[in-house]
Length: 109
Image 1 (spheres, rainbow, N blue to C red):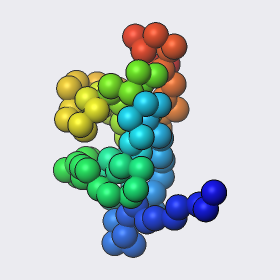
Image 2 (cartoon, rainbow, N blue to C red; image 1 turned 90 degrees about the vertical axis):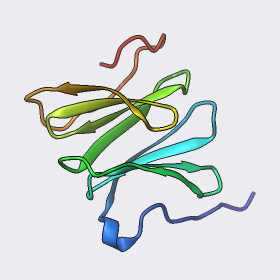
Image 3 (cartoon, rainbow, N blue to C red; image 1 turned 180 degrees about the vertical axis):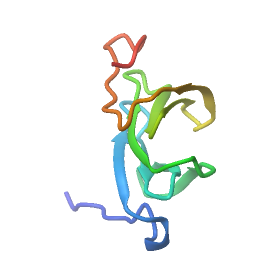
Image 4 (cartoon, rainbow, N blue to C red; image 1 turned 135 degrees about the horizontal axis):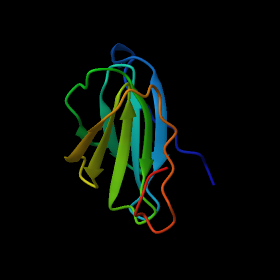
């Protein structure tokens, strides 16, 4: 197979800091220095670009079912549905997050 190569952020958006593939929908979510997360399809077409957050997006993680994902940034976690809409926001004094879902998608560790 030939590899498909595409660019998910232009240079003016800053560096891509994190990416995660959806387990079942063939979608990619990525976060960058500009404080935005973006959802792409498997062909590289952008499906969503979020509004800018307060700081760089340092982690993203799809749930095992692929129906939601978490976004981590300095002092906050966002729970988003598969379309990128924020469902809940959690604040803390933590810095960067390493997001990992439990197998049943009930919690993020």
